[in-house]
Structure formats: structure tokens, C-alpha cells
Amino acid sequence: MSAHFVYVTAGSEEEARRIAAATVQERLAACANMFPGMRSIYRWEGKVAEDDEVVLILKTRAAQLDPLMERIRALHSYDCPCIVAWPIAAGNPPFLHWIEQETAGSGPRPIEV
Image (tube, rainbow, N blue to C red; front, side, top):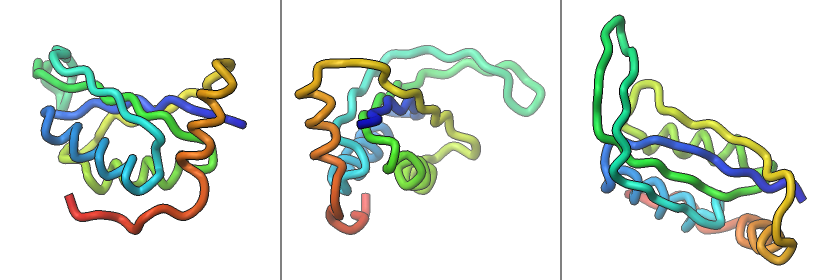
């Protein structure tokens, strides 16, 4: 089993919730955690900017990474969204098995959000 965390930043709670709901409903992710209240300082188009964002952490398996990232890009409002993934090296076996079960097989077709 090769479970992964996928880290995403969104411009609002509404956007993060839409991405979370769609990807879990479509079985691309087993779970999504939302962390509102993040303040980001970044360089964009030659200028330093500062904005409120929401962190979204999704749990999935390696086989779903590409479709998950593609779906996030389709739902995201940013021109260049932060979407990064890293493998889970170890964890509670029943939890890792749950991620596998919840993201296996064919889920519902993409939903309109």
C-alpha cells in the first residue's frame, strides 16, 4: 500500500470545501482536512503579496495521485495552485487500509461543484 498526503492551498473556505467534497465524493481522496486561517506571503508576478488561505490535506493512494491532482486543478481558481504530495512512510495499518478501500475501484462520476 502506498498512501500519500496531498497538500493544497485554497483562496477561501468555500473553495477548499468544494475541492474536498468533490474529491472525496469521487473517491479520489479518502479524507480531507481543512485548516482555515493561514496567512501566506509569497512572490507572484514580480511582486510580494500577502493573503489569507486555507490549507487542505487530502489522503489518497499512489494510483490516484495523477487523477486527484488533475481534478484539483480543474476545480481550483488559481492560475498556478499549490498541489504537492508526499508518501506516508508508516502509519496505523487499519487507517492505511481504510485509505486504500475508500479510494479503490470506480467511484461516482465527477460532480458539478
